[in-house]
Image 1 (tube, rainbow, N blue to C red):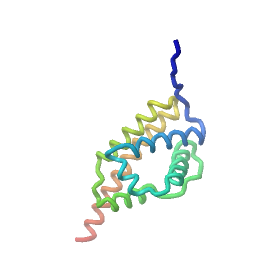
Image 2: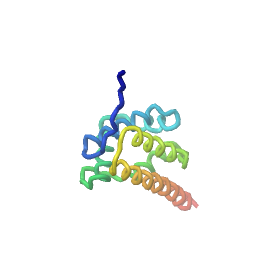
Image 3: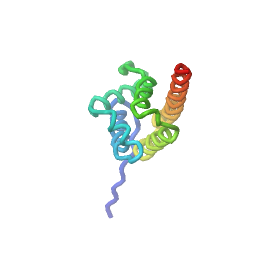
Image 4: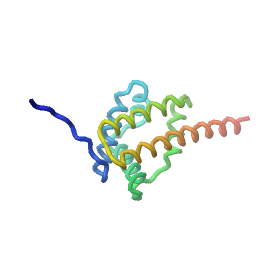
Length: 140
């Protein structure tokens, strides 16, 4: 009898993070709810995936390859989509992230990335909300 069981991998280096990022965004692009947000904003997926690999490597390994402001990027996405992003978008994003980690990876770094993503989703959502509120008050 032949059983094919895919071994979950640890996240120990940039290559592992790249596998995570690529697997995650493949799932995101297929998602009916979130896919349009990403495909509507991202024209060069290769560059985007490399940039996000830099970001998550920075979060995990504290290297300095990432340059950018995630808060500002997400404010721009929210503006592009007429400020209709809400907690359901962040919940769906996080559910896919956790699902990919649970199905493909194991170990301490996988758990750490779950925690970092949970905090990140909350922080970005709150930042977008506060930024909208600040802009509404400035109009008054």
